[in-house]
Image (cartoon, helix red, strand yellow):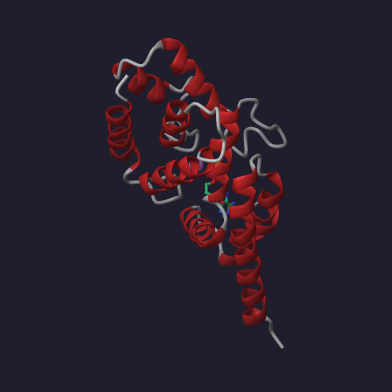
Length: 193
Ligand code: ADP
Ligand code: NI
């Protein structure tokens, strides 16, 4: 397998598929998750970089909010057309399936690669980009600003304590502090007296 070509093909595949989505599952999100995953993986000796890279790039290509897919159909089609061996395809799909917050509440991924990609995805729901995504998602789903702020308390502020890896925990700390700072300004600015 030529990893470089595989990764650039995966980027093109993702951008063709997700380009027009504004609700947070867009190409740019996948590329940021890939970048976060590479940064975390740099501190995790022994992880399989090919699996980490492809799972990060492809983690949303069968998302249930966008597709009615049961079995990672888009990811499998891309990987098998690219000549990735079956056992690697299984590994990559099982990492992808262990990443989602909603599907796996409370359950940690079993593999190191799953832990890395899950942390990478969760980091993108925190900090300045996490704030932007929450309001973009809320707007797209007809939710008010106040309703989107509820999501901070229900999910975003909990993520810092759920990181699997040490290096993600460090990045999460400053992103969490920025969420707190945003909320303190927000409540100050909207208070009525
Ligand atoms: P995952 O891929 O982990 O399942 P989601 O698809 O739930 O994540 O969320 C995608 C993006 O939309 C994230 O940035 C998340 O914080 C945001 N989001 C999800 N649900 C809501 C909500 N009810 N209100 C505002 N933002 C949301
Ligand atoms: Ni994602």
